[in-house]
Image (cartoon, rainbow, N blue to C red; front, side):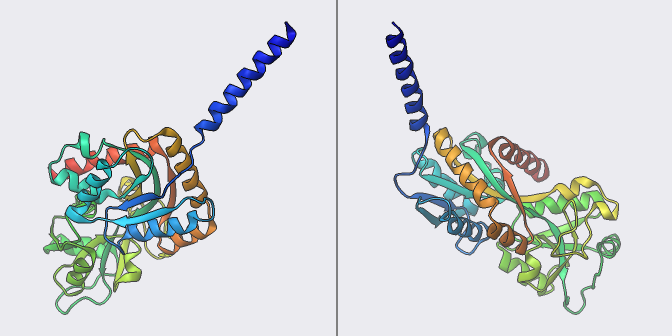
Length: 315
């Protein structure tokens, strides 16, 4: 009788171990990461760096692809058309959400059709002006100077598109009590060409833009000053609402709803390892971006807040 009980116990233990073993997910084919931006865009560069570092921690093969059509909507549609088997990952940022809402697409499909499994970063927004403005345009050394000037003059902002940065501009200048006119130039390069060419007074962008273009930041939406921009104050330091220091651009990964939980857990663990990698941290610091490790619940809330604020502003 004791022997029979021992045999039954061993069978149960073997069953539990077998179930646990089967729950361990490992890729059996390449995983495609589809970017919502063109090659060379922000999320494309970060994804390729992520894949480079992933080789330290996994033998999995990743294929990075790009589809920036319709502001990234075609990339989202492509991912939704694939099987929810764990071999397709969507690399996205707020511009995708903005495009869904501006196109008046069904959020229950184009937003809720994904599981938002990992946010990698917080890229704060800042107000940018030319270092050497065109003749006839004013020069600003501080954000307060820009605000005072805009109270009696027409403030024109250049923007890459009527998306996340435009929404940030609305929130910022509503808070400081300044009206403005925004002009969309359909992309970062055209946007900064217009700004540096004197077609606008200022723009809302990210800290990394200061190293790419002849622009300087007057204020940054961060909870503390950035190490790479030590002379640039936060909104709270200037006496404005602390909520402005919590407006930043997220970038992360999603999968089609219904993707196996085991794959998601495997991918998230890999993201955790890369996020803690000194090379990744240094890379992000050089881009003036804060590393984040938001998993499904927190990342989903970030996306939901993005949807709400986008709809409110665009209305």
